[in-house]
Image 1: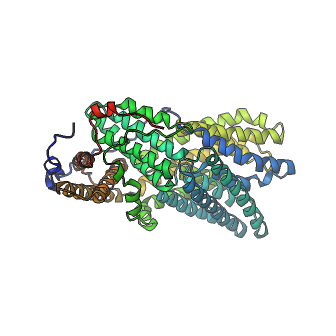
Image 2: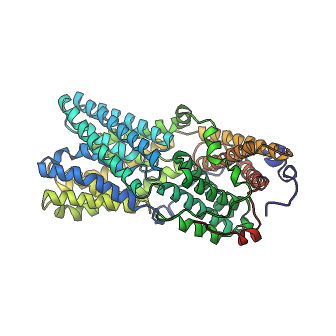
Image 3: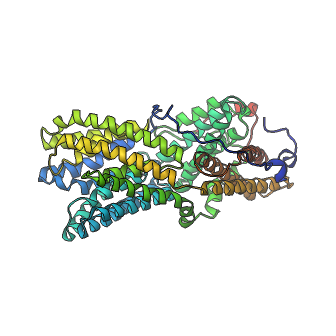
Length: 574
């Protein structure tokens, strides 16, 4: 167990030097490029069917309407708005309304820039440069705002394709109007489930936190994989608090907060936690039934989680953009070089290579390599699927539309298992979309797609290696300092005879967030190349000391019950 019944000051200490010893960093081993496991299939997302069904519902009416009007050549513009339905499925509906509106506006803005460039020039060199700059801006903004999947790839796909579509200045308003109309329909599709299950996203986030905490409790805090399970549980709990923060769900939100406190208790005292009970509460959150209401803990009346979060200062968007500068440069350079390489090879659609490069860039070089392998494998299998599907799709324009709808569904249903598997459906869908205007030679399409995939992946990865991200080491230093200071703040409060409940809760939330950020920053820095050795020992020491201090704050707040008292408490009260 974490606790001995002694005073918190004796348990956690206050001296930073004793908790987080600074050692000279050892020479860092070289980062390897993994192959094993890159293509391994994982479990599907809990809500894989939501984006899959939403995109079909968003794409079908506009495309079928265009089919009836004999204007499938306009489908690219309605697709721009329809694909916005893929975003924000993990967000509460109040936040989802804002995020989806911003996605629609961002998609339309990128499309407007692309159409304007296409109308003003047909110079492919200039158009590739515009596409690369747009891709870099979209990547940076999506990462800074943490928009979530599918991230920048859909935005870049639409804007890059529009750059090479024949366009006149007079056509632009009408084409943007189609995108906005389809985007408005996507907004309605995204918000519609809230009528039946208004607190669904918050319930799912809380259930995920409870399950993650149960997994950690099952290790008893010392079993195999306990450190990884603890980090995963801490991240899930932090994410759930952020979800509740953006929801503010009244009585239901208050009940979910109390369940999240139980997940935090499990993080603090895994030995005294029953994983079965946590999993039972998580199961009860499915559907629309009543939220489980466990026995009220002594400090529940002073639960200040969301109020404390709301009172804390927010990080500005500009502050979040700064560390992403190397990633923006990588994206702009890689996309531009990929597009120019495609042009040099005489490929008529350089935007395919550009989009391939844009899809690669992840938090570090190692993850970028893994995504590159997945992209290449998925696209190569996908062109084989296109060769098999295209005769059926060409039987009738309606067959073409329905085939694309089926591929849309398949892509979203499979991509959460592994990116390459979703790409098997995305690739033939992208190829079939080019046939909305007119049928083309299938052999040429397949050849150009294969070449552009290989060129985009190779050039894009070379750009990732060439543009070093030395800031990742600096960010790790900052995250370490923030975690150590947050731990010291909590430890000083624990040393007081009667710390203010609000101050202690604020310190606990701040420390929890700092530890989550530290782990994410350390993981990102570990996979980066060409940088100084990382202080891995200091990271481990900071995490261990921080989690011990978190455990002590939970005990001090009176949130822990002994297993005996928990067993006697009523599990669920309607």
